[in-house]
Length: 258
Image (cartoon, rainbow, N blue to C red; front, side):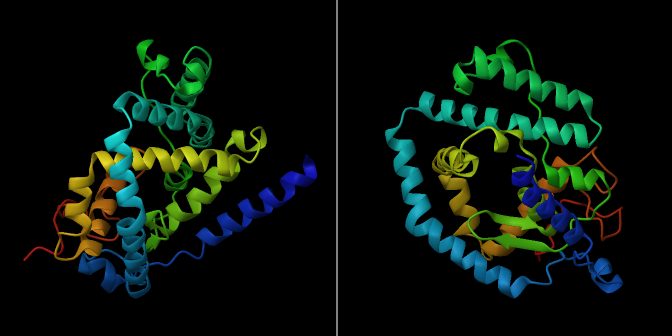
């Protein structure tokens, strides 16, 4: 067991070291108010790849899935996937010093795994236990690491340097990784099916952003940055405001508007 964990500890160390190499904007870039995207050319190429995957594979599969599968089953898959995330939420709550979030995550996981039929039913909500969420990208934010440059990841889509590292760390710090056989494949299957449900249900909205916008890449980037910063509100200093711009500017202003 100790030998098996050594590669994980090394990867964790390399990931944290990688944060110190995150790209930082210049003073001119901070003053411009534009999203910090020094890798825009390569990001746009990755965006086109993701669009091709979505158009030829994920979108038709998702719309077919939601048109055939009953809503209660789709909801159960979503609840099961959410339940699998609770150990990760608990760990990150502890790392952030947020005992309330950690306790809620532990309670939800224990209740939904037992009397919630392994997580297929959300019994915890019926008992009045609120929802909780935390990830390692948020933990790094609380620890003071800046988001770095914007990134478009293959298959996953919009992200940034901090959250990309956080995704890797979430896998390494999830306790289920040490108890579930082949946890990557196990969790990935349900994550993909859950995302198919969301993609199918909100197809019109997603299509309008990706395929009907004048610049789908810029629109997706803007929405991601605003939503992510809003999610981080209250968990650090920069919150959902752009950490590189004047704090008195409107965080929801569209930099691409005429």
